[in-house]
Image (cartoon, rainbow, N blue to C red; front, side, top):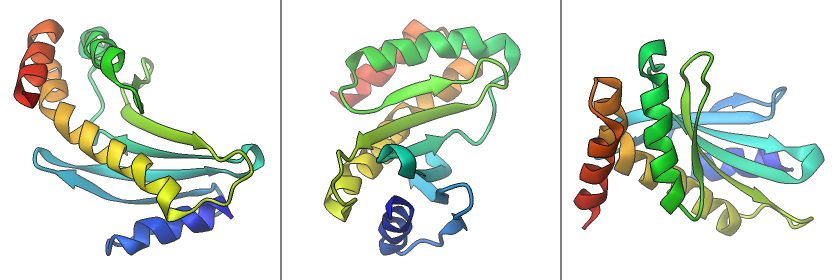
Length: 150
C-alpha cells in the first residue's frame, strides 16, 4: 500500500520511475537549480512508515568525510523536517525526510511535504556539500549557504 502510493506520487510528477517492488523502493531523478541527483521513495510497510531520500551522486572521499559530517551537523541543527546523513564507511550522503503514517492511508497530501523537503533542502545545500568535498572548511561553506538563503 505505501509502496504503491510512493510509486504513484513520483509518477504524478511526470518523471520516469524506476520500480523495485521486491525491496519496497522507487526512484526517479531529483533536480534543482544546483544540479541533479537520485530521488528515492522507500516504503516500510511493516512499520507503517515512508521516507523520501535525496542521494548525492558521488561518494565523499575518505579524507573529506569528517569535514562533510561537520557540515551536515551544522545544517541539521537548523532543520525541522528532514536530516542529512553520511555513511562514514562508504561516503554516501543522503537527505532523509520521513513520516510515520500512524495507520493512515499514504495520500499524496502526506507524501508531498517529504518530497518537497528532500528536493528543496538538498538543492539548497548541494553547493556547500560539494565545496567541502573539494576542500573548503565546513564553517565557511555553511556560512555561505546560510547567507545565500537571505
